[in-house]
Image 1 (cartoon, rainbow, N blue to C red):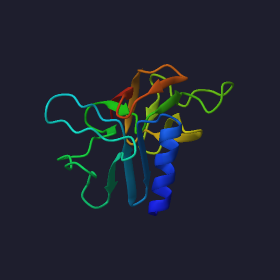
Image 2 (cartoon, helix red, strand yellow; image 1 turned 45 degrees about the horizontal axis):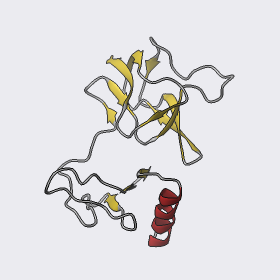
Image 3 (cartoon, one colour; image 1 turned 90 degrees about the vertical axis):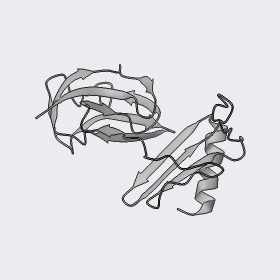
Image 4 (cartoon, rainbow, N blue to C red; image 1 turned 180 degrees about the vertical axis):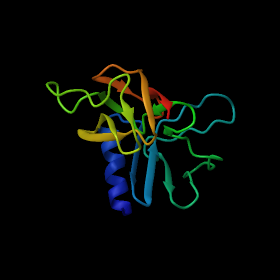
Length: 157
C-alpha cells in the first residue's frame, strides 16, 4: 500500500464520518484514527486533516504521538470472548434468509466464520480464531459494533 492509497482512505474516512479504520492482510497492517478526545491536560488531539496513523509489521508508530506499549487484542484467546476486529455493522448470517453462522452451543475452531461485519460497504467475514463452544451471543444482528467490542462468549475446549 502506498501513500496515495492511504490518502484515499483518509479522504473516505472524512467523507463518511468514520473515526477509525483498520486493514490487515498477511504481513501488512494499517490502523487510522481521527478526532481523538482532548480529555485531560496531556492528551493529544488529532487534527481533522492529519489523522493518527499506526502501521505494522514494524513497531507501531503513531504520527504526531507516541507508540502504545502493546497493541490491543482483537480475538481474545484467553478471556473467553471473540471480539470485533473493526467498527461496522454486525450480521449473524450471510443474508436475511440464510441460517446464522453460529448459535449458542456451536463448536468453533480458528477457521470457523462466526459473523460478518460490514464496514464501508465491504462485507468482512470474521473468523473465531479460537477453539471452543459458543456460550453466548452478545450483539443483535444488524447492530453497529466498535473495534474490540465483545461479540461472542465461548468456553475453550
